Length: 225
Image 1 (cartoon, rainbow, N blue to C red):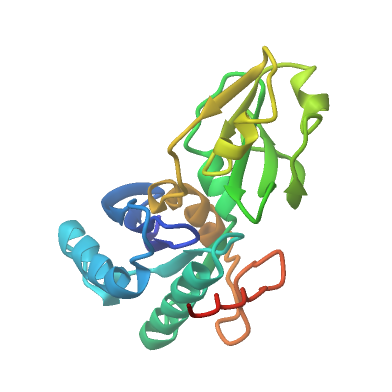
Image 2 (image 1 turned 135 degrees about the vertical axis):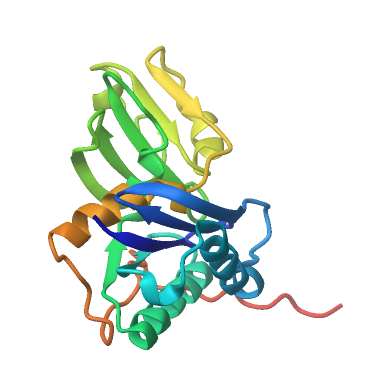
């Protein structure tokens, strides 16, 4: 029975939700292609709290989608969550980004593969059954024609996330389902965060870091003409 502020910034979707007892009661997000987190995250927090008619001091905890995903987005989201947690003296909860994404699908059977675009033909992916139980841990995975073949031979496989676009160019199977134009959203964080709150599964605010999965590689600037 918790009142939680949920932040999701792992992709271009700058998303904030207030949840009560695991259900979203207010949501603000910007799903456009550009990263707007630095400009909009704090504005969305204030607006979501206003919609929910909740003061920051009434919150029971702050929840953050921990990654993997965009380095910049994750840094902004985690820094904001840690700052709020410290300033308000509220517990910090982290939830896996790919599970947040997977919960946009309701399936009666088969498996769910949430995937986020990484470099070149690589994706960050995980595998869940239709009840969201993990079947394989999160991996940075290079795609080829045989990716996920063992699951596709057994039954329906639902792919979701912005890694779907590159996956469609490689995988052609009668059991494949591609769900396009979906990004992780704070709207699906409430239930996961509520479960962790009830278990007092909190992060150490001083030492918590985003789950980058891979080391950051800076791109070299293009030479000036």
